[in-house]
Image (tube, rainbow, N blue to C red):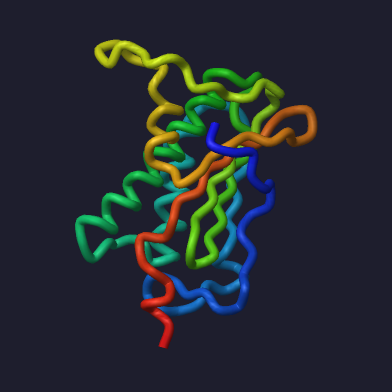
Amino acid sequence: MKSSGEGALPKDSGRRTTASGRRPSGSDRTRRLVLAGSESAVQRSRDFSRAALLAWHWLPAPDAGRLAAAEDVLLMVSELVTNACLHAPGGPRELRLGWDGERLRVEVSDASPAAPRLRPFADPGRPGGHGLRVVDRLARDWGCLPEGEGKLVWLEVASPVDPGALQS
C-alpha cells in the first residue's frame, strides 16, 4: 500500500477547472453508486464511472494519452469492485467518485475489516492475484481506511490535463 491517506473526497478550492476548461460544479464533483451485493456490480460500476468521466469531459478523449487515462480509471474501478466481490461478505457496498479538477479519487466500501494486501508476484500465466498490482502501478496513490465495521479502499489518479493550462 502506498499510504494511508485521507478518507474524504476531494475538496473544491474554487480555482480548479475541468478538462474542458470549466470549473466542476458541486453536483459534478462527487458521484455515489450504492451497490447491493456482487451481482453485476463490476459492470454497473464501470458504466457508472464511464458516465462520470463523460460528465467531467475526460471522455470522449481528444488524444491517445487522455483515452489511456480514462481506460486506466475504468480498469482500476473494476479491480477494486472485483476485490470486494471476491473477498468481502455481501460484496461491495458503495462506489464513490470525487474529482476536483486536479485529481480523481475512487473509493469502494465493503463489510470486511481486512485490509487488502499486495500478493507476492504471481505467475503472469495464471489468472487471479494481479488486481492490486495493476492498481499499484497505475494509481498515483492508494490505500485502505476503516469504515464502520468494514473498510474503504481508495485510489487517486491525476487529471490527464494540467488544470493550470486550462485557466485563463
